[in-house]
Length: 388
Image (tube, rainbow, N blue to C red):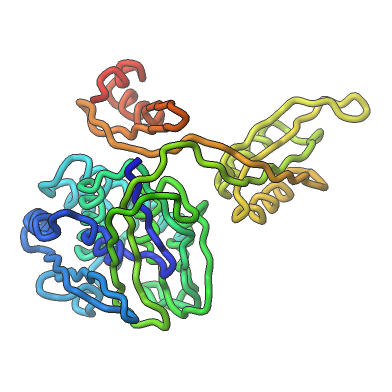
């Protein structure tokens, strides 16, 4: 299976991801020319050889109206979600690339809206909405399209520490919107001061990465190294490895947390399930049971990774009346999973692919089918029949 692995030991930012993926392409100059033509001079990407702590890589720079990204001249240029989506939708790039770029910015808008308590329509992106960030996001989406990996895996994400200055003032690292985007993703902090994972980097990881963990067994064919702007005590790079990994099933260790409940209403249980999924649970289920004094009751169970243990326990104690939670570590063997975009007459839909043990399955994402069916007055089956 063609696998892309992202080493995020020094975080993830749009420019670092862009440069690392450029390093994997067969013809970086051709890809660069295509992107620059699409932006028609409004944003100009360039690649330069760079070196961090003796490690050579590529650095991607974006110039907007003659200024380099991050310069004060355009650091306060704001753009609404509508303006951002309109600009991206008008780029002359493949339909799948446009769909991915729009989805990434919508993720950012949802996170910003949540942390600031505002409707998405009121969100202005500050540094995220300017053309330099649009260029980074679109470039990553386009390069991923060219590389066409069947599966993307990333390491746990180093987020940095300390504080970061942004349009809202001095904020802790990771910034609130970044932290919201990183929900369910394994993260950690060490002694490096500063912001290592940006909202743009977090949104790209959230959208594209199929699983997070150690480097899988794979035969590496290409290596791309993207360098960051900051000089840090360790090499400020993001490495991307492209190669062939076995398509067989993956085995991982998970936690199964459970508790018996005889005093929860159906509404309580439904809310607890939503809260557990929001906290990173992989699955949540109810089993009818009988308890002492002949009481009908419910066994609430959830499955999650070690990194989500504390948050899942907190949810169980907060949203149910349980006094104790049982904890079992178990192995789970699962098929390898990836997502591709497929076309329909009404726009793209995500298709989930799973394979291993000689089995290959594909299934269109329900939410995408339901959205089109509702808009077009069709059944889900009629939409599914039109998937190309």
